[in-house]
Length: 570
Image (cartoon, rainbow, N blue to C red; front, side, top):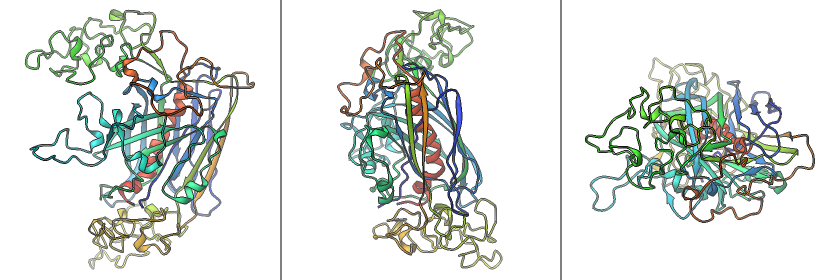
């Protein structure tokens, strides 16, 4: 069994915005007080409105998230993923996480940005998370030599985690089928990081590692659509932990995201107008899209010859192709009257947006309740340092793990409370005390070897059977989690319109109906016509729930869950 963090978030607020604060725990030292500010610009029934979510844990003494699942009220319309072109932008995240790098105190800030796109829910074509390996007879591996999910081996311009199903998901959640998946890949500390957001039918039962979380997770279908966020392949029982440069994740952490209620893609090829240099000419699914590397797609480039065709400002108007909303027609003013990201100079309908694709829909007028179930990480010795950061989990630390040399005279990352030799002069410094390949601050048993060389042993390689952040080889009760599971459930009510009986939206035929088969139906939407211009068929409210929730959880995952990926292992 491997430790995991399942983190998901989703919520919508009414009127303009308000602040939700999860109350702190009743423990003296271990606090869990995340704050969430959610803004919805439009609460009119069955309409569209932009959304923004600010999320954070402000106090560095707070424990981080151990898990969270949100439930979207069943009346909200959520457009199925198979009705949105694969690769279509659906949201973005900017976060500031606090990390410990290479055994140092957890006080380094790292800015992270994710762009989320619609990803396939079709399980018939999968992608592995393993490193590329040479096949028999090959002299070099295909792709770019990184994790398979971050490759584009079929050459269609989409990373394989987007247009293929990451096969580890079913091993983490159980064999359940989402009807919508959003995914983004960002580079964090030099590592490609996959973040996914999955939405399921109300009443879906998951098979999650960790019995306590699974038992506590609400299962009432009346709560609505459960949402889950996955970071990398954390929780996959088949992965092998590996040492890495990030040795701790801690508070404070903050994030801010903007989510899209609709997107414009005139040719419905999965590339929105903003990023499509040929917005009326769909690019092929396979093959080279820009042979001369001048940021003008091949299908409309007057000269795409790899040797002679390169012209980074094709129309000579002073704006390079990649940033030009009319790359083939000079328009120095970049005027775009209908705000569809196609400049007026080349827009077939300059006063009407081209290719509007809606992503969801507000419900009918009424009142809805959002439920957010969340847990904080455990602290076995109640010293205010969660187990995943505590190198002495059963003895209160003498120092502060966020401060340099605090309680650690020899600067080896091991607190003096349990360091066999904390004397900096007489060779006390040992950054890997048990010599198992994991630095002290990345090791869930820093005093007892449990590294990769022992991975074939039942308690080898960071194994943590009870998911409490303490490795089995040094856990006093390896079958029983140490430390209180800090459970918090938040509910928030929202009034749509003037209130009333409520009900599902009547003008969103592509929205998922609770109980409908969530499996994708037919071919990808990238080959299907989309909504007509002016069709009021979407809502940033739903997108906010779907993508904004995922984006908030992204920081939760980066801030807490990834600890188990890069430090605490399985």
